[in-house]
Length: 481
Image (cartoon, rainbow, N blue to C red; front, side, top):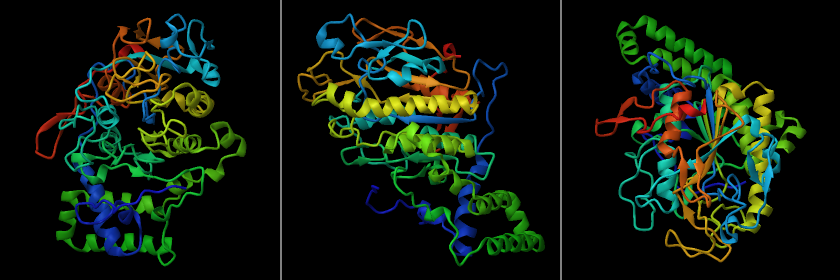
């Protein structure tokens, strides 16, 4: 199991996120968690167009498999067998179960599930200091091009005025129907070098809308002390506290007026329900899964993280972001997609077997459970890799068999929630260098996520300076539905 050191980040009242979920005293529960939940009272209602477009509101939940590090689109999703050898690389294309759609030979299991998914082969943007990972990841998960990009392409560490992660907006506008965590991010933060978690939190929305960060390896025993009652606070005692609060409110008109003003009664109920409910703790318990299912997803960090994502959305969580379990610019010979030093060996022997096994298992599992119709699955990185081998496109050095960063054209996979399976949206040129048809910006992909959840992507929220900001300056890709 791995963990990340450093001082826990504080909420506005000085309480850490883990502390506010820990039940140990009436003051902690009565003052922190309900206040945080009460912040959601100001959220606008979900916006519904007068004439709903295709796919609007189809999704109840989203699973984002974020392949931080930038996997090579040519060697996985968009093979180019007729290109020159220094472009097409070492891998051969294979047929899928849909006529006319080919994948790289690195994805044989996914090839059998392509009837359930769509490949977007025309994701593209021109970088504005986004050649390196941090800024590109920030854009991909917040929908905003960051300012103050360093020449290296990196950003400053996370700050309270950052733009919110897409999961945080979903938490604000679409809280769960069940006593369940609204959004979860696992098994590690997004990271390039020493910049950890940039774009992964709620930013100017406030800490109340942060995802629940489970930065542990689900392939090991998971510790969930913050979702457990302390032994000295049994459920019956907590229920008594709830009843006592209701009695006090009923006998004190002034307290009742305050409660009505801030909607505290409703959010006290949510706070108690989250702690008392076994729902969240049970969702994190992978031992409830049959061994065969755990094997199907893969007995490794990524596989068990994605299986856990399925369990979470099944229990009512709206948004789960599974980050590839590696520092974005890490060693390609161990866990990273950042294949400057070498491209083909790590993809063939390490990364693609895990991605192929896990992604194909997720699509098949959701389909068999009847969950794919109401769950949007998005698999994507912050950019692709350079079509030509051994060249420098971002100022980084590359081995003769390595590929550099390439934001100008790459591929994402999307499935579920009304997305038509067995199709390719957009088209790249003969070398995978630029879109030939239907270019898609990362902001359009995020707009599609909001759209499928029934949230107007052009909804305005107020930032930390009380300025209006759209959720995302992009448009849903209606042609997917």
